[in-house]
Image (cartoon, rainbow, N blue to C red; front, side):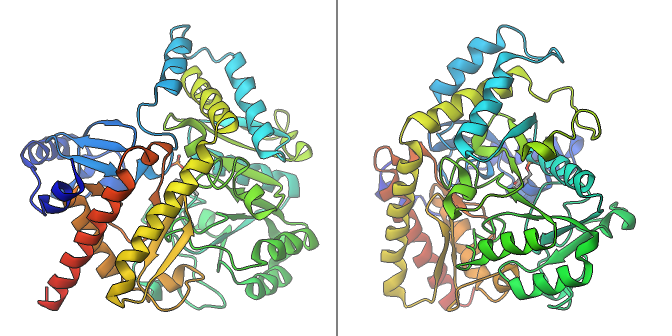
Length: 451
Ligand SMILES: Cc1ncc(COP(=O)(O)O)c(C=O)c1O
């Protein structure tokens, strides 16, 4: 598909097969999918296949993928280097509940690439990783409470689903003492009460919180960049101040590197920002889309397992995930894939600026070149609450228009665009920019017509 054809396909893509599939799927799956996050009603996309930076849906529509599975597919879909190794290893059997060489190798690579993780354990999802990191932090400190930042997402266990994604910012409550906002029903109040929401990039509020309740707080868990709000970056000095504060109050610092790990740098956000956390959680880019995840950190904390802290899992360290992690991490270590991704992201960002600057629209490109967003605002956003003051309706209209024209960012102004190594190939960058330009024009035109 050329840039011209992509830009002129327009909003009418084929939907017949997917609509029929959706009608079938909603009979057996709530929302017609396995995750609330991809339940888009009749617009739900059913995927056929992917290769590199491209995906095709069941109607044969082709898209440049800017979601990359919410981040994990760092090299590209169906990467032969990873898949060949996984295939070779899986033929030896996949699940023994015995420990394989691949598992040890994967954990060694986590240690080698991060440089600060002394011991780790594999899990199958980021959700499990954050749940276990929180538990081991509580065990180590003998304290029950965990601080998390508003708008940050740490997975779908009960301790993580607090103050994550309200559309109505007023629900977050008072700025000094934010409300504890459970996402959805079914989260026991007793569990929610152990989680304290705080405000990203607000060190003063954190200090006041620690002074008031520090003796009960085991850990603070942080997405080093606010991945759930277009990758809002830390203000200069924020991480350093948080590191100092946590040390002062004997509180553990958990870097949730599920999105940033092995992406912002080989050693993730900890390397990128020059911070040494106490614990970290990893997933996504670690396995190029296979369900590989890990939690780890200081030896003295992790050594509470196996004797005093529960961690297990039938599929923890399963051959497929462990082999995928080994090969993916080796590639990220031994090639310039991460640098390539960063350069590609910078080129896309430059293209976005060349489209938006002449429009006179106020906008900010948030995040890091490998995972970034566009916020229509004249203020640099610092925290989740700032998302509400951006023109997210315009963003959503552009994202929906891009999808219709053959490039697929998430149609939600909170989710960043994810770059993969394969996006560097061919004319992908030019096509992304051309589709973006056509979608901006169409959205602005629709707005001027009052739609
Ligand atoms: C920062 C962060 N932590 C944890 C998770 C949960 O990971 P998973 O979806 O593998 O359970 C996610 C998922 O998007 C995430 O972005």
